[in-house]
Length: 177
Image (cartoon, rainbow, N blue to C red; front, side, top):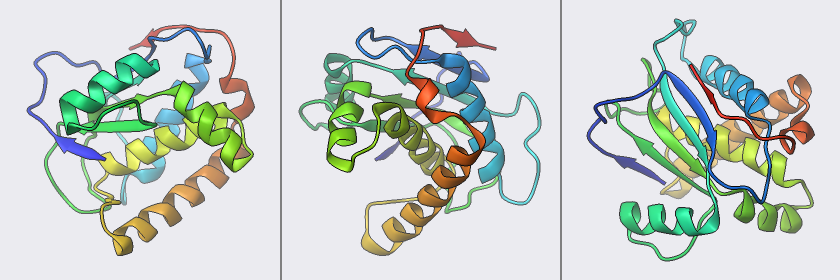
């Protein structure tokens, strides 16, 4: 789900922060994955350093439920919410990414059991999913949803070959540029 909001007055180029303790995550690896996904989804050109403004927040169920209610008026926690502060556009949307991605590892763990994967791999999938939303991909209708899912799966396969995704489930650190 993507929401268009006014751009906040203070943003950082790339912030990775875990605001929950139940699922310790390796913020450095998550940061590398985010940078890679941003570069992989930039249509037709290399990403210039400092052109992206992305916040990635790992939050607990209570905070996710609050964000879910405040932003989309849905009750309860969800897996991922993307807030897009950039210009509207269709996929693949060029230009800098301006947004926040909220991810709930507790919900990721529930889906991991269902899909026979790990919560860390689900978190990686949600990060990629959020970045795709920021690049203009949409999953609100069947046709665009299939297109987005194909791209998400392609990026997940490439990420799994490039990064040790199981190591996302390690120590906690706050990372900002």
